[in-house]
Amino acid sequence: MKAFLVIAFALATTTAAAAAAAAEGPCVVPGLGHFYVHAGTAGLFGAFAHDHIIEAQRIDGCAVIDSADLAHSSIKLTFTTAEIRVLDPKESATDRAKVQRTMEAEVLRVSEYPRVVFESTQIERGSAADAVRVHGNLTIRGKTQPVIVPLTLARVEDGSFRARGEYKFKQTSFGIQPVSLAGGTIKVKDELRTEFELSLK
Image (cartoon, rainbow, N blue to C red):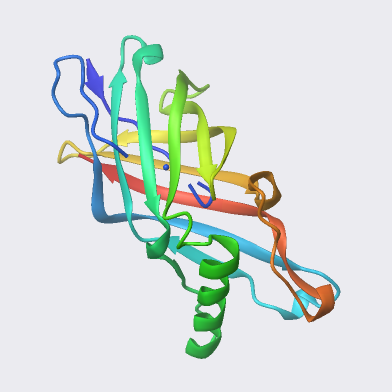
């Protein structure tokens, strides 16, 4: 009766849960998979600025899925904001450090909001056999918005599960003003794209 499900943000999402038999559900395996946020640039000189690649390096989460009745399934994921890192391989170490400071102080406000949280409210099957749609609430910087995240699930030979998906969201939906430089001639796009692959066991 117990299977796995996990998601993520876009910039997104935990506590242990009990399965039908009261056993702990499958949980995120640290160090496996990835969760990236892609931030594009816009503005008059946006074409001359680099897009940003950001990685959530710590995700805690467990899931309980009743394969016979997805309505009784759930998941909750928590992202530690202090461990979200700017990768930006095309930038120098100095520039990466500047972007990191801006993200922590102005965008995420890490000292005030140490976590990004996703908690499901409904899970339903998708059109394909390995597809599901996860309805839930995403909380970033203290503001909660309903989201729907599509993903695919696969079982691995060692008994673990792999979840893959993409999701887009707008920063302004969570009260975040996109970073703007040089009088607005270079700015980060409002819409961010997340793409992830997580392992649970």
